Length: 333
Image (cartoon, rainbow, N blue to C red; front, side):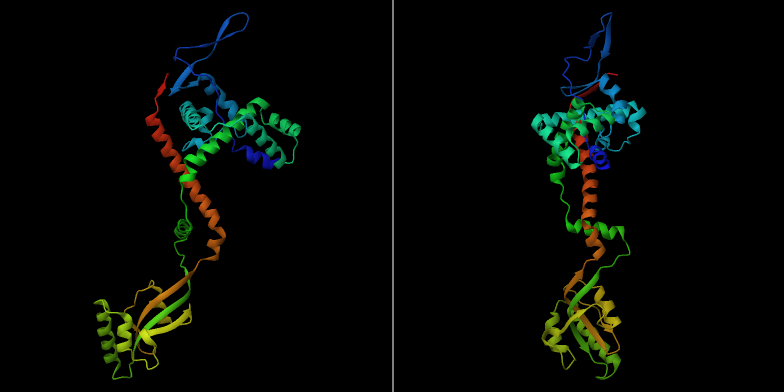
């Protein structure tokens, strides 16, 4: 039952009405004794009319689980619909805007499709149709009203997917950036580095002289000369490889001074002169592989879903603002 209740919270609904030619037209109900005013137009949205009966129905809809689509509330709260007439009217106007687009884009669902969905819902919640009917009555629905509500839900879901969700592009990089923003102290772990080095031996003369030689080569790098060419020419490590290639290392395998200098570099960048216990070095990151936080990998899809929801709400709000400007909306109150 809980699963069914959860499913029903996503049901979308709006009233199905006939178009009225003018706001002064009244629906009249003959009680057998006198004519009684039962309805009037309170707003028009293009060719669609919002009726007083639609507004009067809001309290009853609030009692029926899933009858109000909370996505359509935008920045309003569900409680606002209980007493705030302006919020109620704006909600109904938004329903009419979506209803018009559904008709224009021919996204209407057939009765067979609605019946199929009802069967799926009953099967998913391990009920037969009779049990589902009983459950719906407890939620305040009769079968006809629920079918209308379900039809609206399916049509609106299809519309949102084609008009908004399909246009959202959330990448793994977006999710990773969001993860880092939520964890400002987060630092990625470097798994493996390919390092180049030009070494200057402090025992060749004095340490001060070695430092000056290193500074001179550093200035040549800043002037645009090749790291590899300078390494071949000035490296004072007798066992140095061609181009100054030092090797491939995992985080923590080099001394602390070198690790600190390398941590600031991106691929292709070189360091200033680094002093370590062995002498002086200029380091270059030839390549590096970053291991993503396993916590991020575990929650990546959840973060992406959150970004989709956040962007969906923003885009939906923008869509409504645009449509309200384009549509002819008039209030008769």
